[in-house]
Length: 120
Image 1 (cartoon, rainbow, N blue to C red):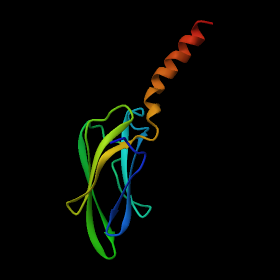
Image 2 (cartoon, one colour; image 1 turned 90 degrees about the vertical axis):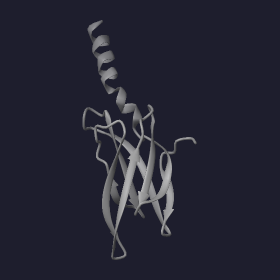
Image 3 (cartoon, helix red, strand yellow; image 1 turned 90 degrees about the horizontal axis):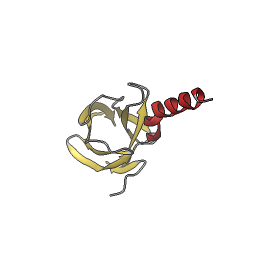
Image 4 (tube, rainbow, N blue to C red; image 1 turned 120 degrees about the horizontal axis):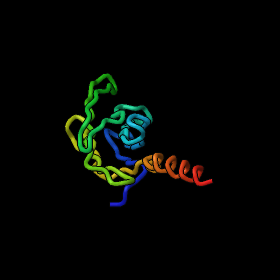
């Protein structure tokens, strides 16, 4: 399956969206996997420094408490394999594209810039 920028799935008749983006923590070398329900964030991993892992959060919907779990596998350069479950039931399992994946190269851009400047 080709990685998507946003993974969309239905849960209880509402739209669940999963996204991933690099975050400044650890010099843009980690990504946050974020889950929202009808546009409201219900889980953000925040850029955990783990190659493989999971993150659990609770949220309230229609007066009931629910749990959401996002787990991820080893990342490729531009995407993560992700699974999201709500109340223990798998909702989506697919690769999600890291929206700003090119930021992982920022140290190389600086190094090349310094080298070019020094050669003048």
